[in-house]
Length: 195
Image (cartoon, rainbow, N blue to C red):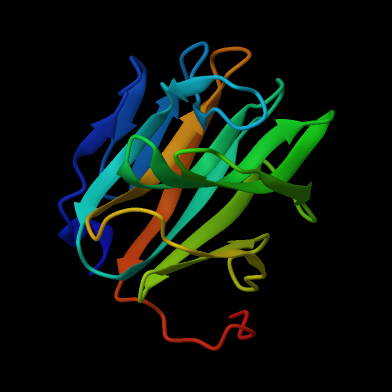
């Protein structure tokens, strides 16, 4: 199914400035918004903004993301949640002076993997596939070629929230636009098939 046929109607921490339709989601982050659980920094935040749906089915979810990342830890991308302390976020995050591609997997504590993004970080695509209790996260610079970003065991429950997210822990006002949303049955592709 595509998102226009899905029940996409659930906000986590809805921001004041936001618009949502089956084909486009737009949001502007509040100050001190983030999703993070303890590890390294010690603090806990569940104040980030996310919009999506809940499902018990496996899926592939794909989206195009546009945002102007300027301040430390500005971030936008995809968000999968089982509970407040079990979730995954992945996308672009501004750190060390430039936007980077990254992923955080949280099972009561957050980890963090990050690296240099090889394209235009203000306009990119993200994809998440959930199948047999495994999550495969991919990104794309052009919507055609999909390198692997993360492969991990899902730390949460069968029922998942899947959607898009936007946060600005050190500032406010990150505007993010999400288009070309797609939700289907999980892609059954070989791990090294990057299409």
